[in-house]
Image (tube, rainbow, N blue to C red; front, side):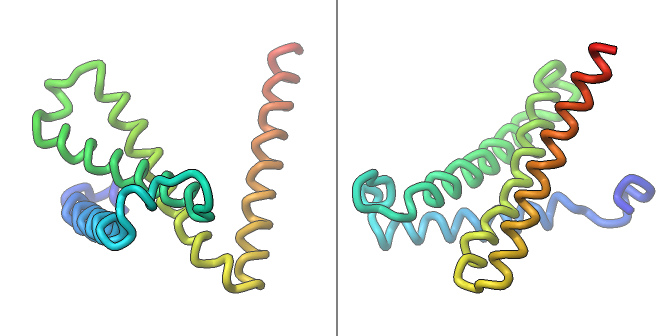
Length: 134
């Protein structure tokens, strides 16, 4: 829908609202837990998720900041880098798995989906090598 009618809805506003929600959540968690405990390596069972959330939200804030500095035409070669950053922000969906791990059936479904995606990835790599060699 977005590619057919790019002016039908301003998706940037919705994306910035979600970025504001995620940033607020991150700041509140860091304030309540404290930066020392938030990034502590020993005894912190949520260190991976904390670092993951921090990385995703930081990349979103950086993307928003750089989009304020200039348009895509002025950045030239760096436009590809910003597109890659936006694609990596799709990883925010993985935050759902953090919540899902408490629900056994939903966790198994998400885990099966991830395992299936990894299998498709390796089949793609194998097929690519097969096509490259032949």
